[in-house]
Amino acid sequence: METTGRLDRGDGVELAWAKVEAEGGGTGPTVVFLPGYYSDMTGDKATSLASFAAEHGHAMLRFDYSGHGVSGGRFEDGTIGVWTRDTLAVIDRLTSGKLILVGSSMGGWIALLTALARPDRIAGLIGIAGAPDFTQRLMLDRLSDDQRAALMRDGIIYRPSQYGAPTPLTRALIEDGPSHFVLTGPIPLTCPIRLLHGQEDPDVPWELSLQVAKQIASTDVEVILIKDGDHRLSRPRDLALLRRTVGALLGQDGA
Image 1 (cartoon, rainbow, N blue to C red):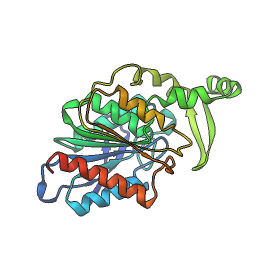
Image 2: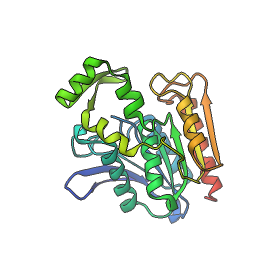
Image 3: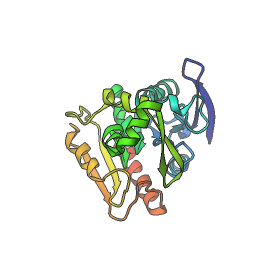
Image 4: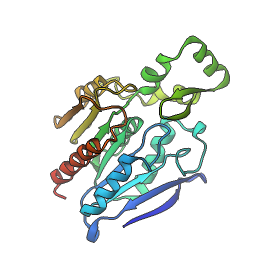
């Protein structure tokens, strides 16, 4: 059974969450889903994992960053640093023991930052079209001169999105990004890592997952490429692959 609630992160901004408790108070790792940029915890991947956890008696937590979904705060006030602190607040106050982090797109970057901040708690990490350091290479570097000028002048621009309404991009997000880059050198994580990526992803090049795998210290790293997969990887067979991947890591931990 899944319970829901809201967590005050300490400044009056409430973060919405939903949690499946382990069957019989089990001690296996909690699966934590980290959504992507301008996404939320109601997407197909998050809800599929919640159903998987409930069916198999595993603990699972999903939540919305500030400014996302039904959490408080304004999206425009968010940065990678802010959303990483949101994640740490949620896991520190709502979970105990080991965690398996599952990060989609931007959530893959935040999962890496969270694992680096709490390495002793991480039993495994899964990236789904993970996009570490995207504020530079996938956003700023792709802007036209006019867009850059507008961003610096106005502090925000709106970029067309194939997934719905235009997506806000703020100067604060771009300026905050470099202080959280992880691909500038070795990534000192030693837990099992699984990186899923569609080779038809128009937003995040699949080669980025190969770079992440190369720079992570762990030797237990697998990159799984889906030849016809898109960015979302939300088709039934993509979701089945995700569930199998999570289940295998839970099995490795003895859950």
